[in-house]
Figure (cartoon, rainbow, N blue to C red):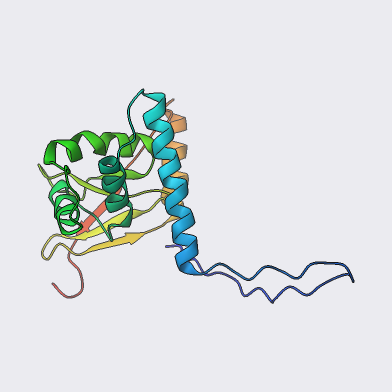
Length: 178
C-alpha cells in the first residue's frame, strides 16, 4: 500500500540581486477554487463538443458531484441540490448529466459491490485507487497499491488486451466487525 507524503521543501531564497521573491503559496481554498474551475472548463468542453448547452443546473450538478465527500448515488446528489435550493434540478436531469460528467473525467462509476445500486465518486485530479469493503458494516477503505497496477498491465499485455478501465474491490470483514 502506497502512503503519499509530501517531502519538506525549504522556503525559496532569492538567488540574485534582481530575483523576485517567491510567491506565497495558495491557500487550500484557492487551490480548490482553481481545481473546480479546471473541472468545469473540462465539462464545458465536453458539452461543447457534443453540441449541448452548459446551463446553471448542469453546473450545479457538476459542483455537487465534485464536492461530494465519498461515494454517492443519484439520490445523494438530489438531496444536496435540494438543500442548495437549486431550481430545475429534476431527477431526470441528474440522470442525464451523470454520463456527461463521467465522459468529462470529473466523476467515475464505482462498483462497491452494490448489485443494483449505482455509485459514483469524484475522479478529477485524483490518483487511481481501489477499495476494501467490509461485507458486514459496509465500511469502505480506499487504497493505492502499485503492484496491482503493474500486474494488471502485465496480464493485459500477455493476453493482447488494451485496458480502458478497471475496478478492484477486496471484500472481507473489518477489524471492528470480526
